[in-house]
Length: 117
Image (cartoon, rainbow, N blue to C red; front, side, top):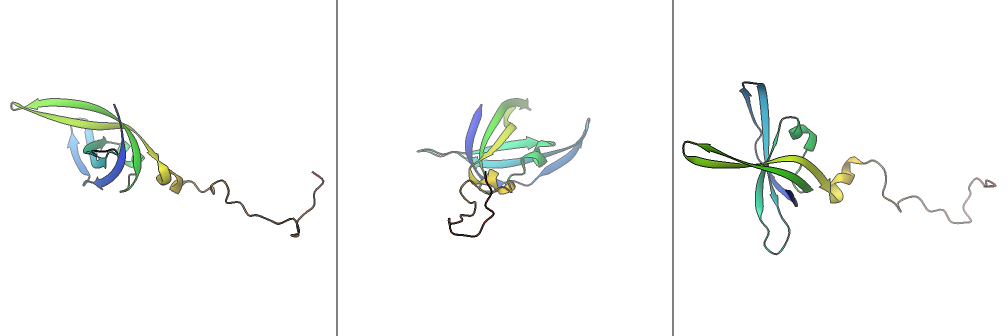
């Protein structure tokens, strides 16, 4: 399942020790676009927390796995982000190349090296 939206909140990172070693989990809230926007809590686990490097305001497209578990007669559902792509202006922030059209303009009468090619 894929969900597109804007990151509106980052919840506090959770860490712990399990049978397989240390773990960490970061939950974040995205708001979908459309006539009736919805807020959805998603989670990132392990190295994905550092890999995603989310900030409030990031426009993202998230691939999600849904999983439900039963505990003491109650069911709990988690939406885990397994792939995340930033879109819009946020992905350009890490790119040091200027956007197309930002190269300097020199008029024909300005001094320059006249090369034959």
